[in-house]
Image 1: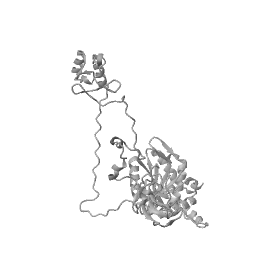
Image 2: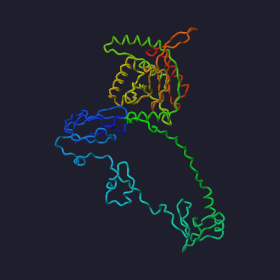
Image 3: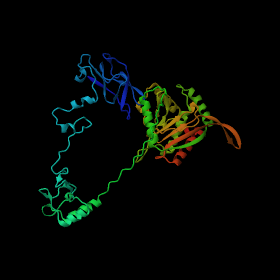
Image 4: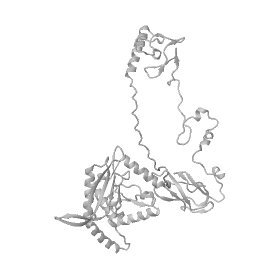
Length: 462
């Protein structure tokens, strides 16, 4: 009997949700055949069977989420008996319910053993035995006194006989002057008698001990603003796994990375002419392709990163990680959220190759067929909202990257050339950088290189 488990499709995936089952219990299954459609934090994927046989049992119902590695189905021979935990018609639970907790501990264990903390594997962790030399709890001494810390750090009872504590008169006087409970002091005289030097040593220790520092007053949390006012009519829409991930990652990015922005206006008239000539050539190829402005921007960014590698980095708290490859993410808007497929090694690809790869990735994203390796590993991202007539905006950095380029619409703009006002096509681009990793001057030099390449597009191909 083969157990089909929730696959791990990406480093950040922790759980998956069953959207639909392609097979019913009793159906024949081929090796590699899709069994179910699963919703992850980024894309919807298909869980495949790694064995041929009959789908004997579905363990997770449609709409339920389970962690990565949890059993979701059983595949085996038609007459093969089900494992005992599934034979009664129920699915194995990944964790005991609260009412089952008392039954999970073996009955022969003592209460002390049951109380031991459990390890990640679910077993009882054995604590080291307490030896007679370990620190005992304070014990009453004399009339309500307690054992005192000895110089070696252990508690040591003061000398007593029949409830009396022996102390020299001068030691008693010093203790009384300083309002000390001398029964807490370790005596070194005959029979444990407390001497003057014992009291003085105790005073020295007490003055040397650091005084407790009051913790800083907690910073009050900002007041929570109600999302719905009384009487307001709303429709509650549950968050998809993708939307939850987007919300978590972007909030984390804005809180952790101090964003710094640099904006430049780029004359796109030469770029439009270059694109027209390139597309005229690409249309005559055996496999025609159309180059977009985004494809040319990706190429310009990739070339600029080769000349300014300090932008192609990640910040991990203690180090700057300079990336050896230039992998450019392209933000794609889907109905359920935003995803950023990655054009790998964009610096080694020409505009035509980038156009083919970006089209393939965008189509796969809209079809929900992106593989994890196709939207992970980016080192820099490009977000273009120009097609929505957005002229200028700032983008949130996609961690663990340190920069993202926001591209606005191409707009006919009056500019001054040689003392005359002329109309030129211009677009504004804004670079967002993580100021922990990238300085303002570095960002400006990099963006200036991107501007130069887009205004002289032939330089991208040389």
